[in-house]
Every structure is written in structure tokens, then in C-alpha cells.
Image (tube, rainbow, N blue to C red; front, side):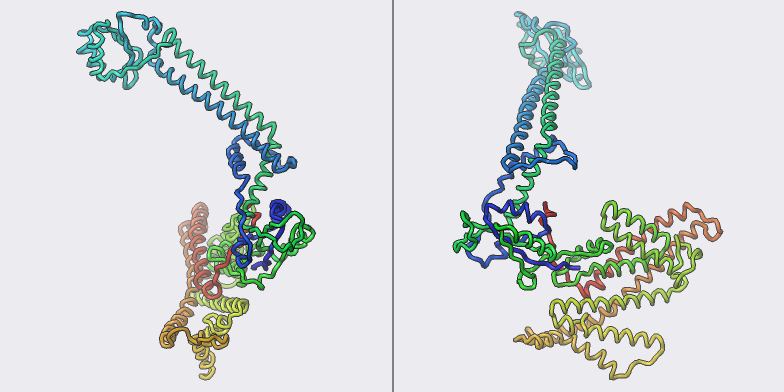
Length: 640
């Protein structure tokens, strides 16, 4: 059902809004409205212009999330003021920031050492002091690398012709690494030849000491030392957060609370009390918060605020306002999962009937009619309810209730895991009574259509809409016409005479005429200035085709329920194929085939039936009595 709502306005000193939000508003499911929009007719009203003072602290908390230690649920947090909480978060962030800066400095040092290490790594096989060759006066050297092809070319055609010594130090899949020596007098020529062979020179800094292997090992030790220092800093920081986890958790709770209060500020407005209505010393600027509460919560909310001398609360009935209330649904636990389907179509407006209960019952019955099997129904019921209770999956809850009715109709059809000779049917077996099943489902569809018309008339009464109640296709006129047509059809099928002509004219002709001219009739009753809007001729032409569409819709909507019986037959037919493949006729069926066949049918047929039932609900029934278009109730607590 749609819960009854009340509109509340809360007023108090501007600097007291955080306290009121924390003590009162955060305790109730309240749908906040934009006060500036709802009270736009008031003078001297303006929005809160202050930015969120806790936004930077929230950013700091988000950056600290990898270091914040969780506290046990039963751990008692400390009471803190906003100032104390801010100081705690700032101190924690400084600790985190100092750690990051130190680590970044050490990582930069690692990158520099790695660069030096990578320079000497290819030359660690050269067993001489790097500092010694730097002292040569008449010999020049070059460290570098070249590809295997160029190296082969050099050794084959150039090496013996040049005054040069080349020492290999390392070989990988692509390059040959090494150093060449040449007298100073031949340096330019040798350098030119090596350049033509794409020798990539590597500059070794002059501050190297010892062999390349010595330098490489020294860099390795320095890198290990830096890693140990980084790990030490990390453990030191983690230890700080561990020791202060209760203080930090307490501070985060306070900051989160006050930061979320900004959502209230965004929806609230400020006003200046120039007339001194409130008589509060030291205050002349006030906040105004508007929102919707359920009828029960509004009474409790008002009673609680009435005891606070710094707060004024006004509660108004929704029917007395021109503001559109939000829709908050409240249904029996078994029906609640079906709210998902209602929300998919559109929430009911505030004064519209909630179709959830009717949808849940009819959906489950239709599913059972199409998918009647005791064994499969029990599996769907158990699996669905277990999933719903443990995981709160709405589809699982729907499946569970559908499984209940599948089980019931399994007994009605006498079917258990496809076997139709194990239990006696309470009614008929679909495969042996095809026409009976098809006609019965059409009759059930007729009953559902009539129920939908009644619900439409109830909605019309709630909206005080004369046209919907009496003259609409799904109002009294359509109800009388439809039920008379159904009565006549059954008379013909039973071979009985039709009612008198005057009865037919009264029950068929008058309703059609009323539907044809429903707009003018409604305008006359409502005493509107124009009985027909626009062209009279065009209205009657359009109404004629609309009337033809109405007659066609009555027929198609009724015949649509033939698919319910058809799916019941389809389900029974699929299971008979499974039993035939399993060799059930021999008396010793293959149980693996039985199990796999049942699983396949449950998956395929269950999905298909679910979709078809939803289609019947949306297109054949909702179209008769339900509009949707309601505004969803968004609780401030849920947003927090």
C-alpha cells in the first residue's frame, strides 16, 4: 500500500542546523524537499551559501583508507567535538603525508642508483679497475654495444685492419656489449668506423671506483638498504595508525556525520526574522527545512521537536497542499519483492492504489497455471526462499512464491517431475484435457480483467474523477459492456437463448454510447466552459476510431490469456519428451536423463513463463487500471 504522508517544516536558528540534523532528522526516514522551490512564494528567503567545511577532511580520509584500521563492532568510540575530530584527521594525514614524501625521496634515490647500476651491469665481466683506464694518456677507450650483425661484420672485415682492441663483456639476444681501446692518434678514424657500425656508446661516469663488478655489488647493497628503510618507514606509519585507530575511527565518524549534514543544507533555506517572531535573543537568521514523513513518523517527530525550545515544527496534511507527495510503499513481507516490478513500470502516484499485492497474487497464480509441477515447484520454492532470506534478492523472493503456486497446481494437474501417473490430479491433466484447460484459463483471464476494471474505478474514486469512474472504457460503462458480452458468449457456448433485445440494447448499446461521448458527459458534470475541446466533427471521428479500438482491445485482452493454457500444455509436452528420452515407458527410466531434463525444462520454461506472465501484467492488466508516474520516496537516512 501507499503510506500516508505528512509535510513537515522545521525552523530554527541558522547556526543550530547541524545539531538538529544530528539529533532529529538523521533518526527518521524523511524525504527532503528543496525548500527554495517549495516555499518560493515567501519573501526574504535565500539558500545556504557556505561551502562544505569538511570537504577537505573527507578527501584526506579517502586518501588514508589503506591505512585506517577497522575497529570491532563492540568497540566504544570516543565522543569528540568537530574541532577535536578535525585535529585528529589532520594529524593522521600529516603522518601519512610525511611518510609518502620520505618514501618518494627514497624511491627517487633508488631510480638514480638503478640508472648507475644498469650502466655498469653489462660490463661486470671486465676484470680491471675502471679508475685505472681513466688515467691513460695515449690510449682512448669507449664503452658501448652493437647488434650481432654489425659485430660479425666488424670482426670479419674491419678488426684486423684497425689499431684497436675490442673486449667483449656481455652478450644477449640482440647486442654484443664491450669496450674498445685505440691509440689517441687513431681515435677519430676508429670512432668513425664504429659509428658506421651503429656502435651505441655508453658514458661511464668518472667517479666509479674498483671493477664494474665492485660498483654493481655496491649499488645492489645500496638498493637493499633503501628497501629496508622504506619498509621500516611503512611499519612505523602502520604502527601509528594501529595505536591511534580508536581516535581516528571516532574522528571519522564525527566528520562523516557533519559532512553529511551538508546534504540538509543544500535542501534547506535561510530567512531573516525582521519581525522578531521567534523571540530568540542573539538570533535573527533562521534555517527552514522541508520534507515528507510517513503519518506515524510525523507524529513522533513533531512530539520530539515540540520539547526543544530552539526548534519550531509545523506538520501539514498532504491533501491540504498543492505539493506532490513522494510515494513510499509498504507491503506484506511476502509481497515486498514484487515492488521491483511495480517500480520498473512506474511508482503509483500518492492518491493511486498500490498494485503490488494484486500483482503478487495474480502473477504467482498465472505462473503456477503455466508451470504446474509438484517436484519442480518445491525446488523453486525452497531455492527461492533460501536465496531471498540469505541474500535478499528480490527475484529469488518472487521465484519462491511462484514455486508455492507451481506446487499447488502440480497437485491440481497431477504432475510431479513430469510424471503424471504418480499422483491423482485434483482437477485435470493438461495433455488429456486440452480444450478444458484453454477455456479455463480464458475464463480466469476474464475474471482478472474485471478485477482490473474494479481497481480502475477505485482509483477514479480516490482522484474524484467522474470520467474514470463511470464513463471510461475501464469504468462502470466498460464493466457493464464487457460482462454482458461475456455472459452472451457463455450463453451461446451452452446452447441457451440470449437475453431479450431490450436487455441487450440496455447493457450493450448504452455503455458504448457513454464511452463514445465520455468527454462531453464529464465536462457537463464538471460544469466546464467548453463541452468539447476543439472541432466537434474531429472529436466524433476520433471517438469512433477510439471506440473501435476499445472493442478490439476487449477481444485481444481476453484471448491473450489463451497463452496461459498454451504454456501449461507446452510444459507438460516438454516433460513428456524428457520422459520418453529417459525410457520411462519401459518402467526403468534413466535417472540421469530425468534429472538433466528436469533441470533444462526448469531453466528454459521457468524463464519463458516469467517473461510471459510479466507481459500479461504490464500490457493486459496494468493498462486497464494503473498509470504510475509517482515520485519515489528518498530517505535522508538511506542517502547517508
